[in-house]
Structure formats: structure tokens, C-alpha cells
Length: 223
Image (cartoon, rainbow, N blue to C red; front, side, top):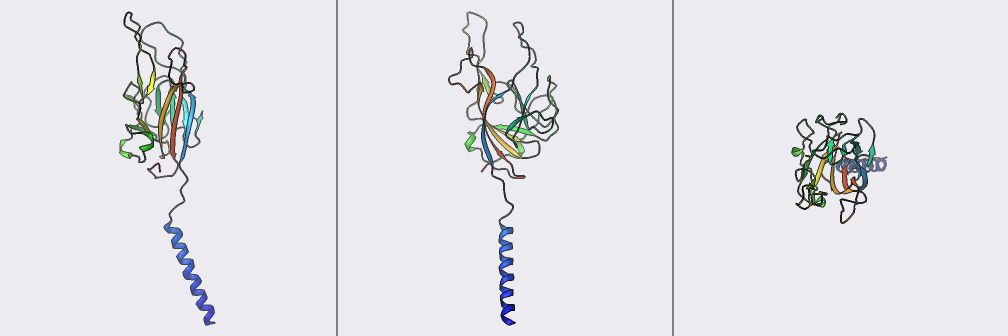
């Protein structure tokens, strides 16, 4: 009888120890997801116009969901969306541009001038949402994600190469619609990521980008 009690006590102690060890390990985390998206098409539907200032863009935005790593047509389950050089988030309010989707999430964005592979921590105080005044990722050369080399159609001044190039070393960081995080490195704005780019033959509005998605609630790192 004494032996039985002794072994019962030992078993109880071992069970308690293992239970505490399991608790100390914390919750099981889902691995972060790293991938590359190629040739995400972000067209406009404007017909060609006369010389002069371009008309406002028209046409649906191409919506992307980090959780699935895919383009989506859902009205609600999207995080970011693309049209021409514009990138919007599913958070904030519409700027009033044509054909913008409704914002019904809590997505936000900021950019940082650090190489993609070196951005391992999210600065939660830097996030901005889309507004009537501006998109979170500003749509302007050198102010957002790209540089536009310009085009001059006033001879005899030479024509510049008229190319959209991602800003080297600039990383976009996103809060998703449901409060998770992702970072993005845009590689190209042209179909099949040509190098070098020829603005007369290469087709624009095809995004290629790397991304890392952190699928765990409350985790603000990409490691």
C-alpha cells in the first residue's frame, strides 16, 4: 500500500512538471509566410485621351489578401488594392477617386527606407490609413513607392525615358484588415519584370513584389 502511494505521488509530480513545461512554452505560433507575387495586373479602363493633363483613372482596383496570398474579388476580405501606380488599404476612407472599393477593415500602412530583409520589427505608431486628402502610400514620385523619370513632349528638349521604378531600399509595411502585419518589397511595375526596362515596348501596370506575412495575432516581428 505504501509503495502504491509512493508511485502515485511520483506520477502526480511528473504530470504537474510536464503541464507547467507545456504552459511555459506559450501558444503554438503559425510560421510566417514569405512569397513572391508576379504580374499582378492593375489596369485602368480610361480610353486614350487628347494631349494635355491626363484624365482621372477609372476602373476597378485589383484587391489582394495576404492571408491567402492571392488576388480576390471579395468586397470585404482584402487588405491592399492596386490600380495603375495607386496602392490603397482596406482602412480609413475613400479619397473620392473613381471606382474605389469601400473600406470596411482596419488596414493601414507606412514605408521605411531600409532594405526589405532588414525590416524585422513593426513600428505600430507609424501606421496611417487612407483619407480624403491622401492615400497612406502617397501616389507621387519619390513620395511613396516609386520614382517616375518623366516624359517631355516639348521639342527640342530630349525626351526622358518615361519609366516607373520602385524606390531602392524602400520597404512598405502594412497592417491587415484584421490587425495582422505584412511587409512588401516592390520589384517591378512592368510585365515579366524586364531588365532593362524599355518604356516603348514593356507593358506597365504589372506588379511583381516580395512579401512576408505575419499570421499570428499580436506578433509584431517578421522573424
